[in-house]
Length: 130
Image (cartoon, rainbow, N blue to C red):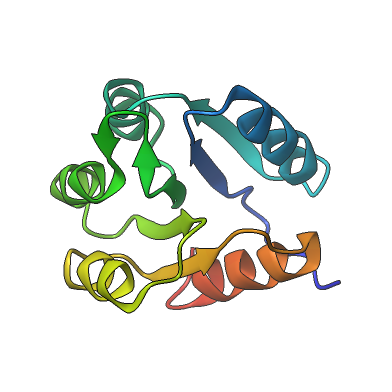
């Protein structure tokens, strides 16, 4: 498994309405020397995106009654340089196209392996510098 190596620790925001997913993902990424913030809803995600300036956001497509794509658009308004990886249990073409047209840098489908998640994060953080 390739791990991100940088003099500066990368900041990642994990947004999912399932607390356990946030907790497990935070633990996994923290062990790999990322600084990780979590949010269970769109309002908290946007507040953290403004306050903490993450380089990357892992954003669930469905946040309870909220649309992750709506949150994606607002995150890109805060800072267009924030890389956003949409995460979903559905890999349908319409959702993927919509997410990408709204500025998503990538789209991954659950379930995925820890190694795959690390690879995708590293690719996005190394693209154009972190």
